[in-house]
Every structure is written in C-alpha cells, then in structure tokens.
Image (cartoon, rainbow over all chains, first blue to last red; front, top):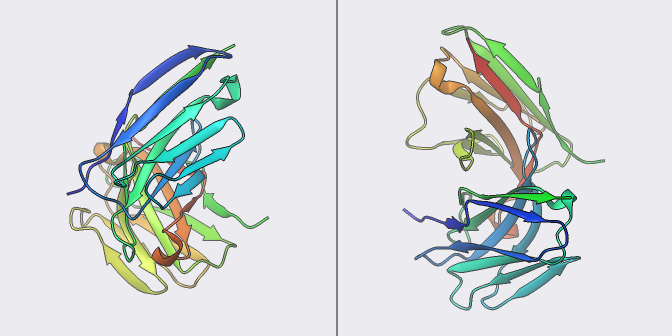
Length: 112
Length: 114
C-alpha cells in the first residue's frame, strides 16, 4: 500500500511569513497533485507535477516534485489570510491508475 | 461555468434510515468518484465509475451502494446509516488516468446521523 505522509500536520503563522509543507513517500508516483480545501467545501486542484525535479509556480505558491518522484513540497511566500485551509497532496501510483493516494493534509492558519 | 454539484449540502438522517446523496456534473467527464472524508482525515475512496463500469474499493462496506444512470448524474445510497457513517461525502470527476487523474470535486454533502 502506498502512503503519503504530510508534515507538518498543523501550521499557524502570521500574515507575511513564508512557509513550506512537505509530502513524502517511500513509493514512486507517476504524478502528484496538490489541492486546497476550505472548511465545509470540497478540495480544489492547485497544480499537478509529473516530472522528477519539476518546479511549478502559482503566484506566491511554489511546488516542487522530488527528483525520484517520491516526495513534493509546497512553499508559500508572504502568506495571506486567504491562504488558510487544508493542503492535501495526492499521488497517482501508475500512469493507468484511476485512484489517487491522498495524504492526511496540512492544516494552515494565517493570522492577520 | 462547468462544475460539479452536490445535493443536498447538509443531510440529517436517523440511525438505520436509508439516505441518498446526489451528484451532477457539467464537465462531461468519463469518471465519477465518491469519497468519504471524516474530520481531519484524508478523503477515502468508496468507489468510482468509468462511464457505466462500476469499481468498488475492497474495503467499502456493503451498506454503501451507488448508481450512475447517465454521464451527468451519480448517486450514493447508504442503506442503513450508522453513527460511524457521519462524515462529509465528496463527489469528484476526472477525464481519466491519461490526464494524470486530475480530479474536480463538488462542495460535498455533510451527513449527520442521529
């Protein structure tokens, strides 16, 4: 069974600070996605990374896929209260897999 | 706007009383999923459809059933809800694994079992 471990589980920071959250596995994934979920809502896809070492930027968010495609990180620069939410990483085990393996998420609170 | 819609957003039922949750999509995606998410946990896949082909996860209880009458609609039936079935139920769609299985989620239905 493939597992994705996310750390930290909870993170509370002041507006304007930078932060990094991590998504780690001992297994290789063909692709990895990051979602943000706000309380009482469904997850919203932020980005998909597919190539080892790939870096993608989405405004103040920077996503990196590890060279071996076993881990990923999300870095947020100058966090804002609107960044508050649960950040979930999810991996596709194989190119033909219909399933995603989800991590338990990092719950981020950005305090104004 | 193309989207995934879930109704109702909140559902209250009694222990053992059957309940049906609905999901519709305007994305015209081939694949539809049902997930269960409990507080502070990752979404847990219950089953998925590729078109009309139904795929049940091995650990999904028999108490949970699903129907997909057409491309746009998918239903989750809980035949005899127990207290442990109280959760957020999420519907998602995707075009399939060839597009990295990127999934588009509805807003969820929060189920309360009394």
